[in-house]
Image (cartoon, rainbow, N blue to C red; front, side):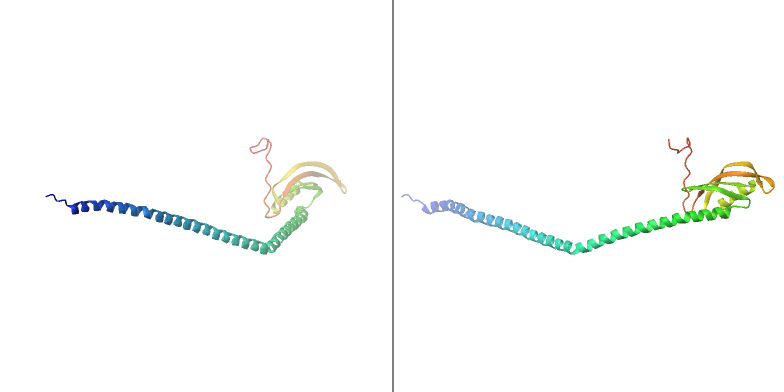
Length: 212
């Protein structure tokens, strides 16, 4: 008598059916997973687009506000520009007035200091001013008076040292009934107001620093 164990065959076949069922379950889940990925992508893109839209709206508001502020401040800026232009004009006028005052003061001080520095027995016949340079021509009866005149000019505080004597020539003259010898002189001085920087001396030709 032959016996066949069908139970054993059935038990052996069950794992195969189980594997087929598991594979079938994964295939069924793929559409769902794909859908979830697609939805996530759509949400991400939508969120980015919405953020850009909000940022664009914010920039538009800021630009509109800036234009409104510019329009509101335009009259103020115009007034500031006009004020600065007027201030510049006033400063130029003040500078011009100060220069004119200094220019007017120079001849007054020049003549005053020269007249105060002249000793007895000395007089001037001509005086020329070119910028800060002053050339004086005159006559004197003694060399001592000429030396005193030079010293007085240098000590006045209005002439830079040294005061240069260009020439001095003896000439015969007549004063009253007695004949006297007069000394005709020519001298050059540099006038400088107190507190003013003295002019730089020009370099002699051939000296170091002289222009060629």
